[in-house]
Image 1 (cartoon, rainbow over the protein chains, first blue to last red):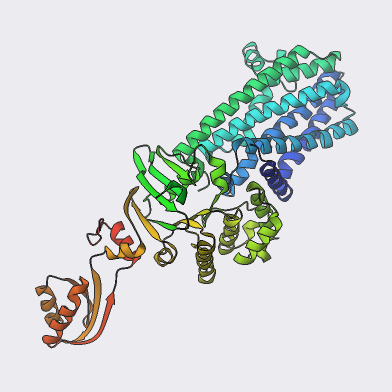
Image 2: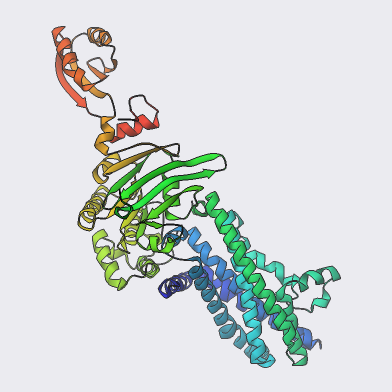
Length: 264
Length: 314
């Protein structure tokens, strides 16, 4: 049985932690704004060179990339803050279930990325660079957002499992690993730009299909529903896979004693 | 004892890391309202046992039941009724004491959390720390805040891992008094590890000694001290050191002379009058006698050092 009180408690902790940690504010909101400004000005430059489509791809990719980065970062860092504080095992000594824990960190990460994307980046892109994200239509925005969130949750859970299993010596993956997907999944350019071998790999990752679908809408104004559907199925499969791997890694971490050693 | 009367039942618990047996087939119960001390030298398996009992480390065998419920199957129900305090665990350092406690009140689904936290804060004298960040308060204050967390769900059983390690004697004494009071009034049960033997003797009804992951002794504190076969007698005397040495040697006793005018003798209590009589008879003028009865600390040292003084059986 899921306890709303426990989920609320974790969300409250995340709220207090976020408002009191300059690092969290810098790593999420500040870097996101800087990225949009830099890539926005690059796109303005490209617009001036008549490569208008590439310019729109760039700023489109930049906004959505921040959704992925902030969501995954928030999910993984929440646990790391508690590991560093030697508070994580205390929390799991309370009657907190893994399901409640995941719901809380997924919700808080999604709220953060939604606020940053739709409260800061989208208005900023519209105001400074006259880029209207919603020009692709509400349905495409919603489908893209849901899929990117699902993908980020899956990666976040996977990375969390690795940190629980191997300890803080692999903590750098919490903020670095996601960038592997940036070149590979053609965030800023069409997948056809990649060498043929990398294209095969790229197409096996749901993220690629989301960005390809988004660019298609940007270019032709039509939603490639099949591509969105395929990406959604891929993402759900990846999410389930991540949960299974996480369960295995957590079990191993508790078996080897690493789970409590992470805090020593 | 009936399962219903035990708040914790541990059967054949084993934890192996690679080839190292950290916990080796231990079984014990914590009856309702009892305080059980878990003692042993470093590496004996105390902390691993506590970690397994809390579910943050998995065992390789055996079973754990809280309140008659299998811990593996009813993890949440069990954890709702127990809690844990250690001077080695922390709360979230970046947020305030109050924010931390409110979070834990939520995790334990406490009704009227403000009232509960304020009541406990009075008891542990942490009310003035509410607005401070947890990482800004002293080690002793942190331990007291951790204790508020440990009592927040009004637990039936608390697992304590050296709870007084960083407390000053006053707060330490208050905690022990509170534990004694709650134990009496609410039938609170405890599993308690500490290196302070006086504290263990004061709080615990039974003591389990662990060594190399095994239970080597399980008895009341008094019962354990009685298993030490020798007392220590210190005699301050006026007279020849050689004469004293000769008399004691005749009785095959182990002794040392810390000073030329005093001797420490290890012997059974029944021999004490005889030794004093013999020394006096040989003209040794005894100016002071001190008898050191075995304490829990002696038991601890005997087990830790593998001394023959301690009898593993009654």
